[in-house]
Image 1: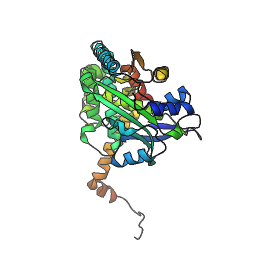
Image 2 (image 1 turned 180 degrees about the vertical axis):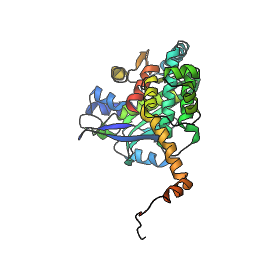
Image 3 (image 1 turned 90 degrees about the vertical axis):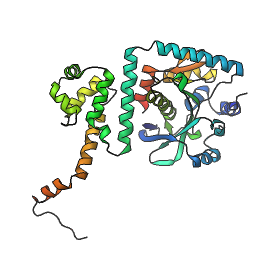
Image 4 (image 1 turned 45 degrees about the vertical axis):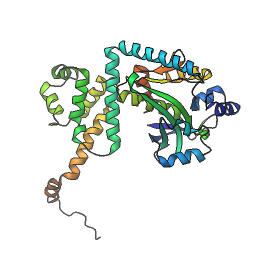
Length: 154
Length: 179
């Protein structure tokens, strides 16, 4: 998968893998991550990093596999602080993480179904940018929208 | 109380809502009762969508699953006969639930040629790979099929010491550097 460097504009190869023991310390001590990721330890946490710089974590995603409902639930996403806002160095980090969840759902034969329950104020953004549909409090993608995210970001 | 709320409030002091949404997915604060109701509703929706899944949607996600499978293999750098061009093509045809004759007509190759490709008795040409890309509506790109074939060829080149020796004996005036 590729993420977009803003200045100079170019695509760089990135990878996603499950966090390992050493990563927890890095995440905790890093000023790049503001959320308490220890609270997500019951879930599956994945990190995204550049292939050329594996030591720098660019983003994290907390996933819950719900096999009984054939769905993957995104519980938390955090892009490294320096890549949020107007001054960010890289774009597409969150997109790659969401597409990764879609790919996991497709691989597990869940039809690409991925759900999340974001803060109300942020709902429109996820619908507009990633094609999520609103079902009551929850948002979800599946089938075509999920495949589109995989094709775009992975 | 959502344990992530404090951090969310701090972020709101520095970023707009759109910037926050672009960099984070922060879970909503729900009471136990709201969460229970929300989960119940999602379960209902999930099974409703499953029940209404069309054949086209099944095909779409299954072909994408194959794309992901091939992509992961290509990333691994190893060669496995289980991921040969013929095996992956066979899996594609199986997902389509079409017989070989119909598929051969779809991609404009003779049935015998298709059988040879499926059994790895013949290497595909690029034209055929372009047709496969078109057939999958671009979900499995030509380059994926190409890399599957090249992966096997790389492996065969590395292993074929006999052919290397035979061909080497036909070379004259070759460069020879002292160690």
